[in-house]
Length: 118
Image 1 (tube, one colour):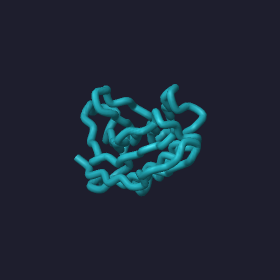
Image 2 (cartoon, rainbow, N blue to C red):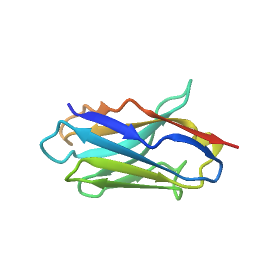
Image 3 (cartoon, helix red, strand yellow):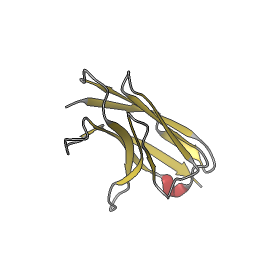
């Protein structure tokens, strides 16, 4: 199990940009996959983007072209750069880590609020 701490959320106007950062601690090796999900009240948690140590990337269709995910495998950090933000991007964003491809369990951060005003 690793501990995840997110930073970078906040209030931004539509069309603006935010960068979310997440740092994992408690792992002696590179974490297999790290990424971001988001959740709004009454909705399922949606995976926004993820990146494995081998560079396999997933970007949700809802944010494609507007987000970039990057990570430092050695430091076990992951960043999410978001541009062209829309009010529908408003959500709590959670960082997650999947330690190993062979294990189904995932660890989650506490979440950081992103609010996009119109």
